[in-house]
Length: 235
Image (cartoon, rainbow, N blue to C red):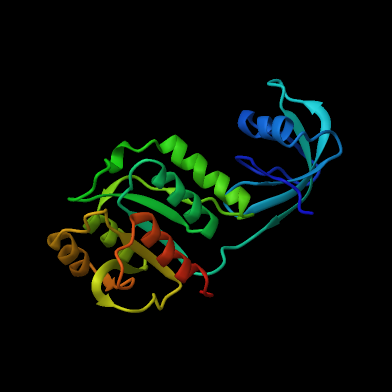
């Protein structure tokens, strides 16, 4: 049985000790009911992983102190995917973030679109970041997806191209296919779809339109579908 995972901001060296923060301590003691001698895995969300053991000590805040046994690094695997997406309403945003986090995408960027129903700059960022972190822990992912600042469609495409990413914009009538490179950016529109101008600007900036099939997908379905297709194949 695998040990429970907990997040720390930085990993100490083997033999050193560190205290879990308040949220992680609450989960370790209250939910998992862990105690002295129990093994845990801690990670920093940037590829660093450590095997550790809970000591009998407590921090000043009352959280458990753990001692690191060994440290290792896990490189990113598969296609490096960043998802630019118009945020869906309500709990659907949480569901989408959770699934994208489990898939191990590199980042999620809220897009400000003409037909968007949610203010991309007004989402609860603290809650969104927590969902991405919890998804990484649940899926045993060493890398926590980064939540980028809200931006426009053309700006997202331009920045992604500058990073050397192949950009795919989900659009009916586009080509059927996947990114050929090991680094990709996905552009997913709102419920009402992108405006014609947004599509034109995205393609002019370097995006390639791809068709996700004959049915109209919800925002979160489209984002997860396309991300899964890319993440499932080797880089």
